Image 1: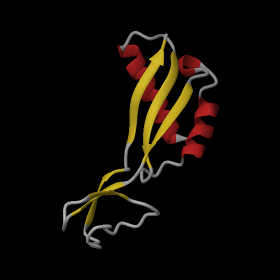
Image 2 (image 1 turned 30 degrees about the horizontal axis):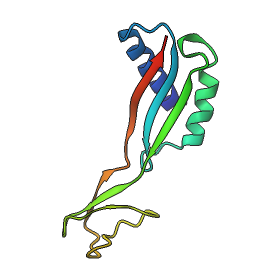
Image 3 (image 1 turned 180 degrees about the vertical axis):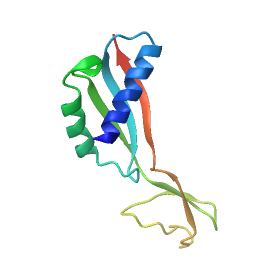
Image 4 (image 1 turned 120 degrees about the horizontal axis):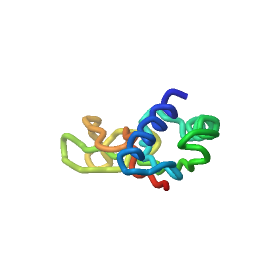
Length: 110
């Protein structure tokens, strides 16, 4: 609930800066390791957008896959099934470079 409320607050603030009276759509980038459960966020969003400047606003989420960088051989690779071993050299010395995002990427409205 608190994540949905924070997103609504940010959307309303940004909409105000853009001169929008109503938010019609909010686009998010949600990393697979962000700690956000998309279905739960969508449920909370639906409950919390029944009135006000975000009434009926659509929430569109783009899932960002996990990407890692091997610190030994330098290869960038997608992480499948949360296995963080480099597919080139087998090293476990990897760094997550994508997949933790929770970013408001766009707002549309009137």
